[in-house]
Image (cartoon, rainbow, N blue to C red; front, side, top):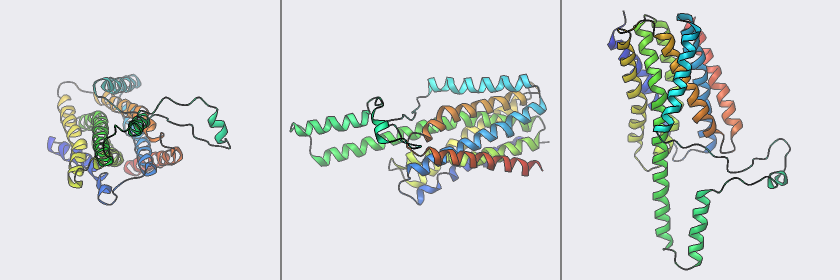
Length: 300
């Protein structure tokens, strides 16, 4: 029989994998958009595969289609509802990208996108400089650096909020699976969730590192963003079974719905706004295949 200590140990290990994703900050001062977008695409592929093979299918094997699909809708609705409570940043397409034989002239005739507030701010500063009222260049540079760090910190916190939103239902599913006697399913969930936590942690750590925070602190905060919500939710799910039996189908669907909502609401838009859609798409496919292979190996 699985004990609460076992649940804590397994979910903690899965959550710690989030911190592994932060380790690249020790080796690179800045990360290119291509690498960043690829990491988001990889996380998206892992999460979609985990949702289907680690949550939906096992949930249907243990319960009814209605229960699992109800959980999927509830999970997605909860994630979307969380977007109204926790502010988020979303990628915006600021230019028309030329592909497949199209030319720059084709892009030029398209209606330009909405104004870029950053560019507009730079233009305003330039106008002020022409008028002679601008502050010294060194002051402008310091202010710009401070604004950039504040923006990066806010972005990291917003990404951390997204990680928390979908880590909690994942932990809930693991806890309920253990309490329902489905140890193999729970361990499979822990493996696939741990794998997708790595690129999640990378997405959280990169903007946090750009704030000037020490690398050790970045790794620490990144790890906490994965460990805390998953462990707390797993303990809650494990304890919840004592109140009502047969909750795994709904909770697995709930976790899957929340993860799918994160993929389409956050990861895919954020990975396709910098001109590296092919890299992100390729990484998505690699992540999906990797999770399917892991699922087959663990089951066998």
